[in-house]
Image: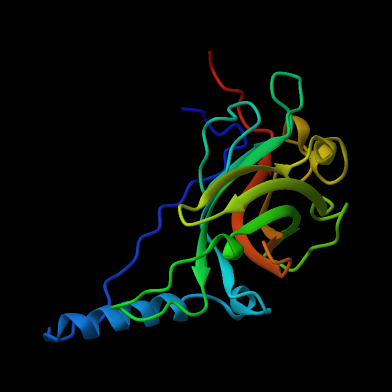
Length: 221
């Protein structure tokens, strides 16, 4: 396990219990209808906007240090300098396809190939919770990337770049080397994916991942 050379404290958070309600029974078909309604309610207006009958769902968005590119987590510890070198940090996203009209419990709608969505590009920008969000001063510059992933009935997994190598040689990240500057910069990377269904109708979806930039301890071995 890598030790935190920046001596950044790791806080463990836990959820507290919610209210206790009396259990009650309902017919199976009503439970299934409620599950479908809950699925649609959990989707944002941005996901279901547009004229396409299909929309994208992000099941998971992870990131990995460029020094350990196969180890994805939901909180990226981005190392600005690793063994004297610089690596870009990859990301991995798991997509799922949704339909605005899911049909009924007895006859659910099955997506056709026309409903499949091909994602072709993405946009990454970094945000800080303290409101200091000037690119090149407080956070790295935003950027666009290209990708090709078609999301069908079984979903799709795709890789992307979460932190470009250029960002680590520019302000404000370059000042973090050797524990300089602010020592660490905590951000949220907002990643928006853009694509079209097979009829050419545009679709987009946005996911977020925490990214902490620092001169982390180099991996051992």
